[in-house]
Length: 484
Image 1: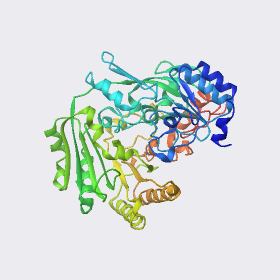
Image 2: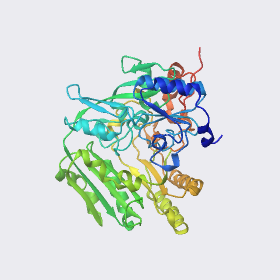
Image 3: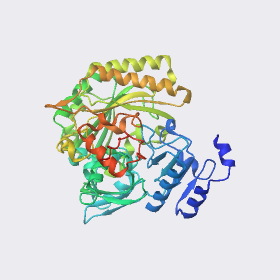
Image 4: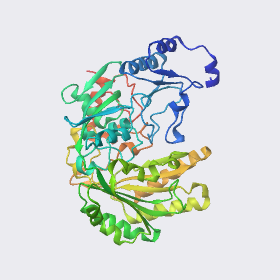
């Protein structure tokens, strides 16, 4: 049945009952708020949900879950809507959208904690923290939702000093599939607390986070260095040399390509360098990168930390938010090779020559220093990808929906080029090859055992206790362990 036909039918009794009891709202196609409720960062993930609920309270969330279960609807949970895998969308199911109302944050400077609604974005988190000279580990992009990034692991500019986002979670409020609202921390429901920190949305809807907050200087140094493509090899070698000695207050992303919203539309090598300190010290630490000879620099000296996020046009400006995108992270963390990168760029150039409309493509490598990440034993949280290699994404931005299948095939082939030609990172005898799950476009149907590694057996037990019916199955779905 089409959605237009569905709209002409009387609402089911369960919907009428839910509308009468919700303090928030629930809408259907054609009703006010519906288009906002299904909009996503990438138009490739806009799906026609049967209903969108906008809860204001934990009780609203519980009632929305009960409604979906009564009607046999798939449930998708949306915070910021940036999921690479589209797990925050559903075709014909119920979206529980936390972003409209559960989007606030507050800072307790005495306890050095920041409490955040499950639908907030990182922008408000950074704002309330910096009002007190405090910050937690947050996304590199402040438009991203807190929920998905936090539950999946979470990297940011402060990771080098303070570890991953999951390492900075103090407490969670979780609405279970049964509708029960529980607190999860080191003392209450510790197994659930462990599982949610890296196990994603497999156990319930997190409506509130409490994060550790750390003293943070008010200004930082950031620069964007742009190089011509003939500088690829010296940039590659310069970054590798820098990374070997990178300190905990540094961060670097680099890549090649043509970014949407950036002119002129021609490939360049771009390095974004971050230093959590004085400008003069940052420039000194990045000297090798300057010595290569960039054709342009966009530095911001003594930058107020709250403004760091607006400096990356590929991720935070309006042009980058428009249209369709397919982004794929490698399934294995890699040390990367220059030859692999050259092969990838050659394949992308061949595509552009035959399909000029697909010029906005490229790759980006995240060289976040991992000392604080590796220092945490793998079993401390459910997140299992604690390795020292770089994270890599390959992207294609476009506008024509008829090219969806073609684009996805191309990007997957490009990813395979890097996997086939770059060594997997190892540390001693322990394998650290699994990459960051939030950059996997196939997370909805991927193999959870591969991603969670040695933590998977315990995760299955946590799943059995808190979601035995497997209601939450939209991100690396974990199979509940068999009952005894």
